[in-house]
Amino acid sequence: MKLLQWKDAYSMGEIEIDKQHKGLFDLSNEIYKLVEAGVDDNEHFRELFMALNDYSIEHFIYEEMYIQEEGFPGLEEHIGQHLKFNDKLKELCVGIDKETHIKDIGEFVATWLVEHVINEDMKYKKFIETKK
Ligand SMILES: [Fe+2]
Ligand SMILES: [Fe+2]
Image (cartoon, rainbow, N blue to C red; front, side, top):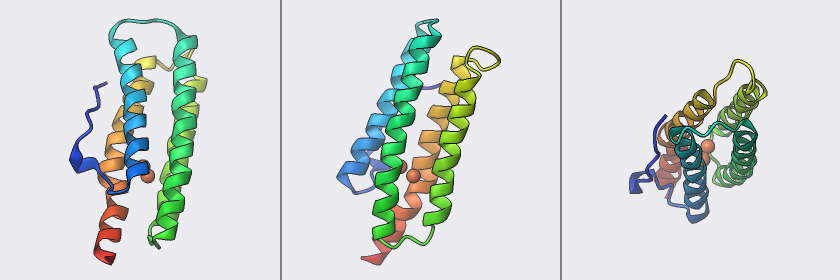
């Protein structure tokens, strides 16, 4: 798992979306720091992952409405990726006491967030830019 660092290159050119992405990075980093500190409190992690899940859903709805308004043709596919993230997170969290380790969930979250912003969200940014 790694600490996520915001870069200007990650900007979508939309203030609210950037704010939400930074908020998601912050939550992921909070989890990272606890994992690194060796904190072993499943209940606390469960709460953090739930907060991250809730916040991501809020962000996804905002983002989907935004890209729909902009007429982004990859909307449906993009919605599918968001849904998959929440499904996977849920699946991992349900197994939190059993086979799933906190570190694995944190790893999944951190990796997914950065890759989704860089590879997928960037697609609508480019589309909107070329429209102008
Ligand atoms: Fe997205
Ligand atoms: Fe996003």
